[in-house]
Length: 537
Image 1: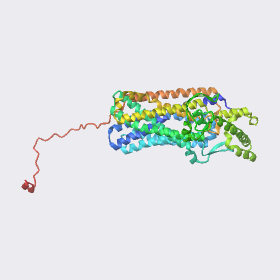
Image 2 (image 1 turned 120 degrees about the horizontal axis):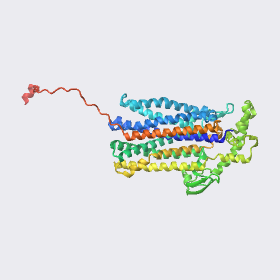
Image 3 (image 1 turned 60 degrees about the vertical axis):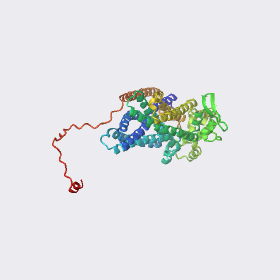
Image 4 (image 1 turned 180 degrees about the vertical axis):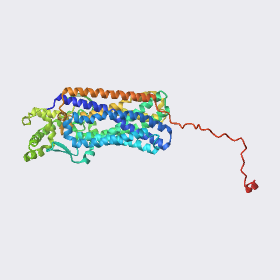
């Protein structure tokens, strides 16, 4: 049994480092494609202003990219240090996408980033444009493999548990990569990064326009960001709906928490616009509802229903009862791998093995499990409802706010009047933190909504952590928070300094200082006209 405080501190440390790291990732994903778009316009039109734009925003991209790499390195090491049982349990599956991501990030992406930064004067226009597009592609492919690994934790596809090795093993790489959760999450997260970059570029461009500095660059950058952003925001909202549909199938407890749905209700089900969930009472203290909207949003039909938390807890209790024989059979197999009766018993109850692990937290001796312990384990299968409910609403609210902002931005910039709208430019500057807050809220929905599992339905969080001391965890958590806070401060200082300095002036050809030949004062000879021409004259 691992100390519960150690588990909580391990979770807090990973959450802190992930939330810090996720401040950098979306901007890297989106800004890389905006840079590629700006340089594409430069290559196709030949206008130097677009080269100046690509170089200036590329400078900010590099600051963010460097600190994103620095904050991301330690996260992967935490799987081995703080989550050793988890790493052993799923290492055969989880390690493959992480290894591929390492190849993408440190070989492909980092190599082309160097060429992009230092190759402006050494590569041709076409070669440098190809490098910039490869940086954008590498950044997003790197995110793809990380999200495939994360999606396995949300919906374990393409793997099976081996009772001999006591590990999960990869059975289908195709199912792992193309699981519905992995694909929908990758597209949703990537496009959220595009929205983040668009707000970032629009906000800084608005700051320049308010001060009447670099007006040509600011107006062109704002227009590209507005057009890029409005399409990306529509996409992220649409794909968020698709991701919610996937969650309804794979993680019904997460969906019930997102909607504050304590009791199963007949169709059409109302949507809780605002509610104050109380986990101890298993009820909402107050709620503002929209009739029929939940059925329409989740099932795309007024006749569809989803189970409430009451039904999910009853279902979990039955799974706990079925999972107990699987764990007992596994304990026999760990001592006698050739025991045929235990193998048959394990196969009969294998589907609910994780729920058997879940009740072990309260009943280490599974031969004497009480109904109260089963009910407690079933109640534990529900994530923290209030945190998931409000994180989801903040994420959606911020998304709708950004959509409204981009619609106005497109209207104003296409009419060439955005520089006259002082109030809107000020609002654009204040919008810069909004996508970052939306991204953090989305991460909380995904990760808190998966609890109490590290691998959904298979491995509970309480079993996954390493057996560290509380003192060690407090020390490491404090160190990471201080270090990552320093990273944030460094990025803010570097970003603000680069923004205040502004873009470099466009490169001009140096004047020709070589001595020029003096013009001759002698009369120039007039060439003789042909005879036939003179006769005609």
